[in-house]
Image 1 (cartoon, rainbow, N blue to C red):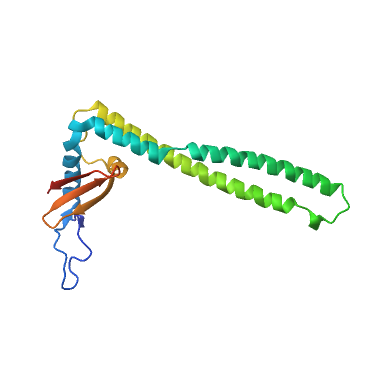
Image 2 (tube, rainbow, N blue to C red):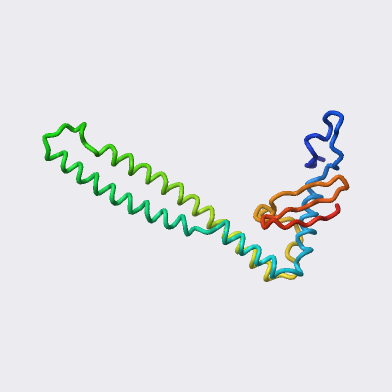
Length: 182
């Protein structure tokens, strides 16, 4: 029978060994379920905190503005490039003097930035949907969770600190903390 345990990296090192207890994955999961269901009498505050986190972490307004500007940039650069190609084709100047290569580089830089921003926008939108589902689940149920939910854990837990006396401090993304004894 194998089980996953968590312990301090310094548990058995040197003279100043860490005295925090090791915990099983099951203990942490049970603590999370217990801890998470405790504050449900304060749903309005939790929902407001989630909405605030959603607004801060998931806003795509600035991304949309930059995407719009970059798309206009692509149109302008494409038009300048077409004109440069036309001018070069009808001119006796050397092809080396053409600005076409510079336009291609500007176009490529804008295209790469657009791809990056679109990925970031998709990530933010996915986070927003996760938080939205969480908010709806808080509103709709008396007891939120009866078993460990990894998606919920990932969406709201920032860290867990194990104290020497066996208490767990859950730090949530909204910066609130709840302490429980295992």
